[in-house]
Every structure is written in structure tokens, then in C-alpha cells.
Image (cartoon, rainbow, N blue to C red; front, side):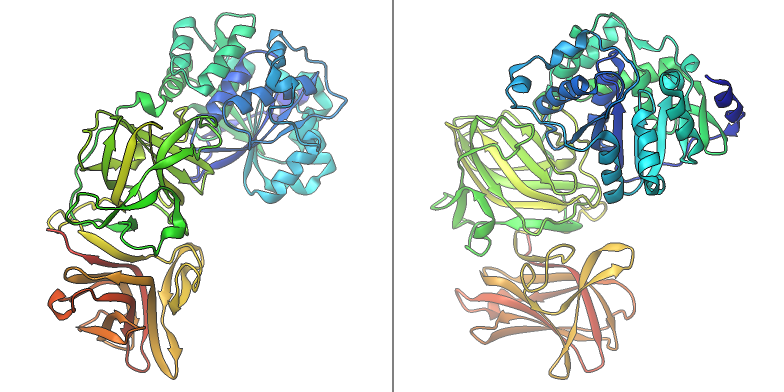
Amino acid sequence: MTKWLSAILLLVPFNLFAQSSERIPVIFDTRIGSGIDDALALGLILGSPELNLIGVTTVGGDTNQRALILSRYLTFTGRRSVPIAIGAEPQPKLELDAQSRFAYHPDVIFNRSIKPVKESAAEFMASRLKSTKGVTIIATGPMTNIARLLKDFPDSKSQIARIILSDAMLALDEPAAKTVFDSGVQLVVVPSSMVEGMKLDRVQLRKVFATETALSWQMRSLYEHWDGADAPITSALLVALAFKDDVAKAAKMANVLQIQRVDQNAFRKWYTERMADLLPPSKRPTPMVERRGFPTRIHVAEDFETDIERKWWMSGKPEKFTGLESSKRACRGMLTHDFDDLLGNPKAMHTAVIFNPVPGPPMGSRTRLSFRYLIKGSDTLRVQIYSLTNGYHRHLVVKDLKQGEWREATVEMIAARRPDGTGGELSENERIDDIQFYTDPTAELLIDDFFLYDDTPMDRSRPFPKRVLYTGLFDTGKQGKEWPGDFEIVAHGEADQWKYAKSIVKDGKPELRLYLRGERAVRETVKVKFRYYVTGTEGMTVVLGNGTKKKTHRAELKELKMGEWSIGEVEFDRKKFVEGETVDELRFELPNGAELRIDDVLVYEAGE
């Protein structure tokens, strides 16, 4: 360390920064190709669901060749969406090692891999910082690119949450290092003396590479190109400091946090176990679980009985005469390519049923998927789901299925992972799309009666619904398009992204009417369950009927709790419906002066 840096780092005891529960956006400013530690660090970034990699920039020496290494690495691990930016000349001298030959591959040479953006590293970082708040920059090389960012785009300072770096590379570009340290941006500095000798041995590396995923193959390939044995993981420590607050102890002065103590053995063990746990779903046992009690919330339900939601069927066609007494139609799987265009095999064909639950509802912490299936010609089913929040697919694999007869299955969706084992668990409020069922292309598959829901945490006494006619959640989608009816969609609070339906005044009277997007047949006694917040009345009338045919059924709800969110439920006796009757709307009638808010509406037939 230079004298001016030593003067700055007269530090006092300090605990590491508090962490956010949301995914942390990071930019990786890397010298990949000079030492193996950056390849292992990039693997940790891609394997950590806590992080959102919004870009990679290259620094030091031949930044173009480093970018070609990254092009192959990110392409082959299904991360084409991660942009690469090249550090502009001049750059401090920093030699590439034998890993440079990793870029000599037909996919790179013949332009089949992703290409770097036209912007320089500094320009790219400025544009990403402008569009993304609270970015952490992880810098493993000299400060050249970051200093240019701070000089040429001074407004970017306020968008940087922190810069995490090692002092090992600072001397390669001391003027740039001084610019960064004088900027006032929060810095986290790892002294090279603190991590000297922190390496993975051959045994630990074998565990890291043993997952045999696209990610582990690329890490292993770079390791085999590298001329070394035990692999340093200093850069991986910089990555861990972005989200793991118990990995080290720090001290602080001004804008600098200096790492004071690292338990090297503990970090080696943690890194090895985290990377070794990135098993592909095919290697993770996925047991089926019991469908227990009435769910907290049903996000999506489909029984394929009507064509109301047919526009959401992405693969599959309806089929009658299913052999089920309780079902008139099921959905037969059709041949298709994998919808996972990032990590799926783009050439492989599958028999699949795929449903797109517009408008992409947010999940809970205990999400399960329950469905009925009939499969022939294979005993394996892949259940896949797409995350709108994260922009990637996760799946789980169910094996040893009984063939040739209808069976019911329920799986824990938190067990789903990306094909390379990354992605982490389905998280609270994560928005999903596309519920997908895949099997072998020569196999036969029928799917029926599926429910995506939050498992109830307490009440097991109420049975799971037998059939769902309608769910109204309002959190996503637009009134009139996804949620037709007479009402207003309103956010729960200024800082709350989730929403409810609010009554409007129509013809001088308060009204809240939900159209069920089409006619739905009534077979048994129907119940309507919902959350409500009402003012101005202690009673209301819930009307279920067919507005087109002018046929209605009414149920009174009295002794309402005013001024607080509560649960309401009414029942419509099947005996009062004529044979073959359908319903297409749900209405809440209120006296003048009253106002009603509703959420989590469920129209269903009770199970046994």
C-alpha cells in the first residue's frame, strides 16, 4: 500500500454494513484471464441468488481478450443477457496467462457467442448506474475504469452503493486509485496480507466441479487452462462481502471500510459447500408432498373445462373423454421446444403442457403446485416455472411416476432450481409466469386440475377446494383487460406494490362488480371467500349470477367489521341452481355512503 493510502486507513472498530433482503445489483470489473480467482468469483456471482449481475467490465492489459473469455463463459452458462463492456485504452500493463486460449473456440471466433457492447467500460457503468439504484461494484483489478467513471460522469457517485476491492492491484494505476479513494464513495478494502495463502486445494476444487453443470464446466475449463494447482479465492471473498455480513470483520474511517480479520478456513468451507450445492434439479431428489387443508391463497387454477383462459395455453390441446368422472376435459401435451431459452437445450423436443397465468401473480413463501396427471411412455416429469422478477426459469424433476392411470401430485416449488443448480428458492413476492410440464417427446401426457397456491401455515381442518371457478387477486394486470368489471384498482399503500379492488359510485350508488371473464358452469354448492375492508355499513349483499341471462343468486353478509381488513365468506346452495346453469359475474351491493375494498377473491366448490 502507498503512504497516502496508509494514512487514510487509520481505522476504528466497525461492524460490516447492513444488508438488504432484495437482490443486490452488481457490476463486476474484472481482470479475468490473469489468475484463476476471477473465474471462480464470477461463478459465485452467478450461483448466488442474493446478487443480480447487471454487467461485467474488463480492466488491465488486453481488455479485448478478457472480453472474449467472458463471451464464451457467459454464453455457455446461459447468461447471454449479461452485457460485457471493454475497458478503453490506455490500460495499465497486466499480462494474461494461458487462460487466454479459452477464447479460441468456434462459438467465439464465428460470432455465435454474445458480443461486448459498443460503449466503453466507464460509459457502460454510467448508463447502468443511471437506470439502477444502489449498485455495488466488485473490482478485482486496477481502478482504471472506475476512476474514469468518476471523472467523466461525476453524477454517478450517488448511484454507487459501494465499491469492493483488494489493495493488491492498486499500485498498477496509483493515480486512478487516488481518484477513487478521494471520491467519497463507500469503499470496502481487503488488504492482500489478510488473504495471503487463501486457496482451494485439489480436493475442494473437485467438490466445486463435481456438480457437472454448465457453470461448473466453464469454471473447470478455465482452471485447466490456467497454469497452477491450488486456486486462490481472494476475488470470491470480494463477491461474498457484497451480501454476506458474517464473512469478515472490518474497521472504518471516513468512506473506507477495511477488512481486519478473515477466517480463511471458514470461508474456504463456505465457498466450497455453496458451489457444490449447485446441483442440477435432475440430481436433487424431489419428493411429492401431501396437499393439506385450505390454502392461504390460490394464485392460479385451471381445469380446462372451458375456453375462457384458452389464450393462455402455450402448449397443449383440450381433450374430452379423459376417463375421470369429475372432469369433462383435460389438456394433452404437445411437442415443443424448451421454453428455457437461456439454459435449456434449444434443439431438444419435449411433450409438454404449458400454461401462462396472465398477468403474472406474486408468490408467497410456501408455494406449492398441485395437479393431476396421466403419463405413458415415461416415468419422469419436469415441472418448470418462469420468474418474471428474475428473468429466468427454474424447474424440479419428479421421477418413478406410476404410468397409465390418473394420479394426483403435489410438489414444493421452493425446490425448483435453474438447470445449473443456481437461482435459489422461489422468494416472497416473486412474480411468476408460465407453469410448464415436460416429459419425453415420445411419451403421452395429460394434465388436469392444477392449482398454484400458498400452503396454509395453520388451519388443516378445512378441506382443499374441489374446484375453483375464479380467482381475483388484482396485484398485477389492468382493470378492464385482465380484471373486467366495475371497480377501481388501488395500491394498498404508497410504498406497497400490491393492490386491491375498490368500489366506485355508479348512477349515484356504490357498486363493485367483477366479471368472471366468461360463463362458468355450476356443479355443486358454490362458496365465495374474500378479504374486505368496509366503511359506512355493517352489512352487504353478495350476488352471484349471469348478467347476460339476468339470473342471480343472493347471499347476505351481516355484522361486518368496519375499518379493518377481515375475511368474508358466503355460500350459494346448489339446489337453487337449475341444471346446466352458468355464472359470469360477482357483485357486491352496498347502501349509499358505504365504501368497500376487496382482495384475494376466490369462487370455488368445497372439497370433501
